Every structure is written in C-alpha cells, then in structure tokens.
Image (cartoon, rainbow over all chains, first blue to last red; front, side, top):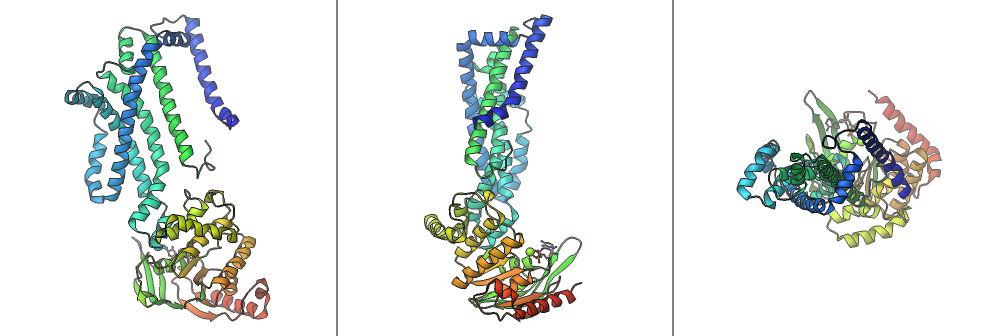
Length: 255
Length: 251
Ligand SMILES: Nc1ncnc2c1ncn2[C@@H]1O[C@H](COP(=O)(O)OP(=O)(O)OP(=O)(O)O)[C@@H](O)[C@H]1O
Ligand SMILES: [Mg+2]
C-alpha cells in the first residue's frame, strides 16, 4: 500500500523538486533581483518568518472556499435531481443556467458587493456560482444515462419510476458527481482568491494584492504556494473520499 | 399460462421498416419448460421485450393467466442475454434486487438470497462485486435474481450464450437440476439445438428474420436428463431433424 503510493507519487514529486532546484540555480547563477523572481528558498524563508499572518489569511480564504464549495455542491445536486425529474422545468431553466456561467465574474463581483456588502456572503455566492455548474452537469449526465440494458431490465420486472431513480439512476450518477466535485474543488480555491481581490479585509487574495503593489514578489509567491498546496489537498481529499465510497470499480481503475 | 396470439413486430427506423416477427403464436403451460430456438438475429430478444411489455407489438396480443398483458411491464421474471448486474451492488444485493422491486423488505430479501448462494456455488462471494466474478458466476447471480423474483414465468434469453463450451454444459446441467427440483414455468431462448432438446419439454423452431414459427416439437426424453441423454439415438435423430429444418430455411 505505502509502497504503491510511493511508486505512484514518486515521479511527479521528483519533477517538482527538479523544477525547484533549476529555479533556485537560475536565480543564484544569474543573480536575479528578488522583486523580479525570488528563489524558492527565499520564498520559504519569508513564509516561515511571517507565518502567523500567512496562516490568518489562509484560514480566511479556506473558510469562504469551503462554504462556497458546499453551497455550490448542494445547489448543484438539488438542481440536478429537480431538473432530472421535471422535464418542462428543465427546458425552461437550462438556457438560463448556461447563461449564468457566461456572466464574467469580474463584472458580477462588484454588483454582489453593492447588494450584500463586504462580508462573507457575496464571496461565498461567487464561489458557489462557479462550483454548482460542473456538479450539476456531471450529476445530470449520470442521472440521465444509466446503462440501457439495466434500465430495460428494471422496467421489465416492473420497477416504478421512484425505484428506478433510487436504485439505478442515483447510484449510477455517483462516479459522475465525483468528477464534478473534483472540478468544483479546484474552482472553489480560485474563486475564493478572485472574490477577495474584489474587496476584503483578509484572505490570501488580499495578501497577494498588497504584496504585489508593494513589490514584495516573495510574498506573492508565498500566497501562490499556499493556494496550490491547498488546492492539491482539497483535490486529494475528494479522491480519497471517492476511493472509499466507490469501491466497486477500484479494481478496473489504473490510477 | 402464457399465450402469444399472432404477434407481429416491425422496427421503424428513419430509412426503413424492418419486419422482425411474423404471426408468432405460442403457448407455455404452468410448470412447463419451453425452448425457442432460432438463428442469430431472428428476433428472439425482441420477442422477450414484447412479452416483458417493454415493446408493444405492431399487431397481436400477449396473454398471461387469462389476462391481457400486451405492453404491460412487471409480469415476468427475466434473465437478460447480457449481464445487467449493477456494478455498485454486491453479489447478495444484486440477487436481492427483484425481490426488493417487488416490495420485499431488504433484510428479508437478503436472508433469502444468503440461503441460496451456497447452492449456486457462490458461498463466500456474498460481498464481492460483480466485477470480481467470472462470466459463469455472474450469470448464476443473474439467474438467482430471476429465480427469487415472485413472478411465476421465467424468461431466459440465451443465458449461457457468452460462456465457453465446458462452463456452458456445466451450467446447463446445473439449471436442469434446479428446474427438475422446482418446476418453475420457463421460457428459454437459445440458438443451440442441443441445449433446447436437453432442457425443454417442448421446442418452438423459428425461421430467420422475419421470424415465423417453423415447427413445434415435443421433446419426449424422460427426466431427469443428464449428459447421457445427449447420446441417445432418438436425441441425435431429433437434433438432426431440427438442424435440417433450420438449414433448409436459410435465406
Ligand atoms: N431498436 C431497434 N431498432 C431497429 N432494429 C432493431 C432494434 N432492435 C433490434 N433490431 C433488429 O431486429 C432484429 C432482431 O433483433 P434481436 O435482438 O431480437 O435478435 P436476436 O434473435 O435476439 O439475436 P441474437 O441471437 O444475436 O441475440 C435484428 O436484425 C436487429 O438488427
Ligand atoms: Mg438476442
């Protein structure tokens, strides 16, 4: 188990380390100015020496990212089930939902701030708006297209629509939902940072913007590192959950 | 028990209208084992979809126990041609599916399944996923699912078609033993003459598409039937007869 994990994560880990080493050497050899491109070691030093502040901003970002993610997931799943069950409503709403994804967040965010103030709510809404869509689309795919022969079988032995929904369509959509969750997890971190850019007292987005405007490139990179690490962690926890919930095809899966 | 009255079926696609079944009439009595034999692609699975109410015939009627069930689902228990075990359900929970659909509480359904699994050579596989089973084992789960289902009439669509010859004859013998013990009403579709003659009380022979009933052949061999039955001279003669009937009707 640990061996397998090591073998799988070995190559990508090696690639990252190699990249960092080249980066470090490049900065050292060509004596690149710190405000242009700080060396990885300098970034890590900055992160450690400034840790309490970084931590405070990180927790703020994590909070809204998780809130937005869960809200978006709930909305996406409920909408998927409602639209799947009510065909007319689906025809009416589907174009609107797609439209919702075409509104530039940059334009929407200030409006949300005007309507809901500078608190947590408008940011959570932005994140939820970005997250619900991939989950909705993925869940619908799973609900709408169960295996044809299985559906025929269920109908032939007299399964009622509610039974078909609970015993076939819902379980069939679970792997699809997880694909949606993975996309949404990535979106939620991005969405959190973007929403903080547009007005907040704390959070990695704020920290990053302040750092950039005062040419503290090392701090910009600190926030980038933290965001990347959080995204990866978030993604990994969903993969972990998926592995434990969807055990039936773990054998077929390569990675 | 089951009666098909002059059933006709066409499939209409955009370009053409394919006639699949032509004036099919047949009966199955309660407790009888009837086989339908026909060449590949002649419309055997379509026939089951009609009996199962999934499709409505272009003309003709389907009756079950004195009630017309044309186009009505829920009246038969069914073993499909290709595995339709749910990949997310364990062996026991797959086998319990038809009972659950019929409204039996899950606990009770599972208890019933568990008492059967060892007799199907699936003891110890209760919690395995279908993924981890061989084709023959999957088909036995699928068969158990149908066997436990409350509908009297069992429709088997080439249940052994995808198995290798050895497993196939093992499974035939196994089905024969179970059937001789329980005597459910069975309608078996196959394209193996030997399989039909070994198991059935009566055989309907179908022509190539559009399928017509070429003949209805009673199978006289005494039960219990075994591998030795296949070697009887009468068996060989009957097999030859049906074979030439099918051969002379090739398009
Ligand atoms: N939905 C459909 N639309 C159009 N044609 C169809 C449809 N389903 C089946 N057919 C055609 O009807 C014919 C009979 O199909 P069916 O599956 O009933 O044959 P079968 O006897 O079960 O074949 P096999 O021995 O391969 O299982 C085939 O030629 C097939 O192409
Ligand atoms: Mg078929």
